[in-house]
Length: 463
Image 1 (tube, helix red, strand yellow):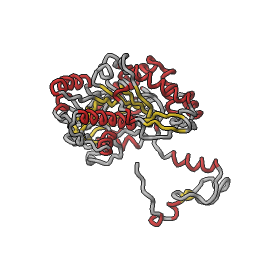
Image 2: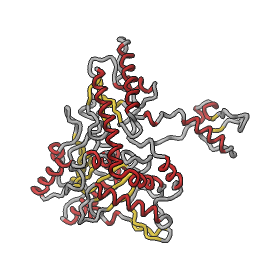
Image 3: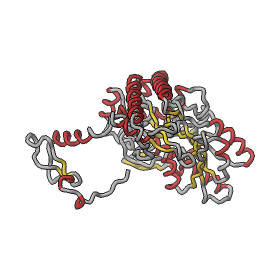
Image 4: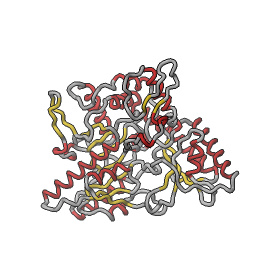
């Protein structure tokens, strides 16, 4: 989020200061909020000041808005605390952390069925958004190299994707001067399909992005259908339009819950996959992954070979220094849980999601948009002719501590407003029952006030 410098002249003196509640015991002078204090403060006082302010944040365990992991085992948290000071970029100084990153790349490439005869290549990132942008850059460079080799213009690249993509893809297209071509939503179709995608593909298409787990409603897009249609198109035209799979969520769910579903490197046109370790990879915020099916899919001129602190550092990233502890935590989960542990956790989350969505559908005023059967995420709308909206429900649920996001769908279906629930590890069946009790109370509240007018906007949540 971008922030602006606060104009202190527009604030009252009281609004520019923090007033400790511990004045007689530690400090009895207010502390400036937007300027650095002139002198030092006792560490316990500063801890208490910040700790008390942060109590105003939402309770992360009651946050059904975020996909991000909100709980890890104490042993994982201990490992992370022990490795906060390790810089992921310093491979020479922290060779074992680099080795652990290499092992994670190998684990993911095999989990996603990289061809045995190929040399799958990848790296960790600060999150799935950076990973997605690295995948997109590789697609652009490969397309440009092909066009140059053919003696054809290479100044008008485009990328095809559903309008339901996460905002990182819009950022990627804007930052790297690529025309985004969005498959719109129509009627009850809320994501990209092969027929609509191919209408937008041409010789300047650097790739098609297919989503495994839409942030709008949790559903998978059909990667195999797009792959098969593109194979035929490429054969007919001589083009080489590839696929990048945005597996930010589903990349760490489908291998365990839908192992027979063909969405990954089993499909020949899937050249790269990104995922978020800090979503269903079950790691605290700060780690993503990008894997290419073969080293040849990552153009060498994107890789920097830096002479850094005495060693050669092959690097492809938008960031440089970052802590290595999230990578360590990812490896902890891989070893600790194994495939069966991940399956059990995600299966439990999906069962909670499907139970919750089914019970919500029974309440009466709600209509399911999805049910949580792909990834444990679902969306639901308020039926017409009710005197309340999803925004009213979101606000009312927040009074009880629940963060249940309400938002509208994109262009062509911006008439549709929904609530969405992400059921992560730590969100139990008991918590789902508590949410249902509060949701029924919210409905009864508005039904008892027939004069109430439904809100049409007002949520601060984003999909």
